[in-house]
Amino acid sequence: MKLLEYIDRIKIIHKLIRESRTGTPENLAQRLSISTSRLYVVLDELKLMGAPIEYSRQLQTYYYTQAFEVNIRADFTVLKPQELMAVNAGFYFQHHYPLLFL
Image (tube, rainbow, N blue to C red; front, side, top):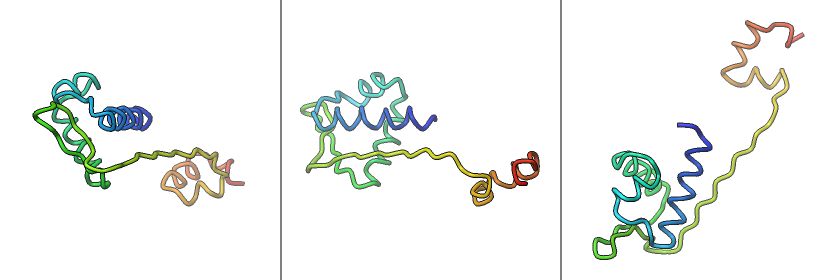
């Protein structure tokens, strides 16, 4: 899954849970254009990160049992040729584009 799509999906889920208006798992999954089983995986991932998520059968919505915030940040940086050596792709670039490393 693309990173930015995943981040957007998490933000939408968080907003709907915070407002207690997710609907049933099936409705929420359909709203997000994902399968119900995929929704359960995402919710489990959030729970592993400490999100106090519960489901109310009576209200038919997910909700937080205590205040919870989601903060996601992604920084993008152009790497210098020497910095490329510190990442896994560095070998590939050095091998296929040696002129970058002169």
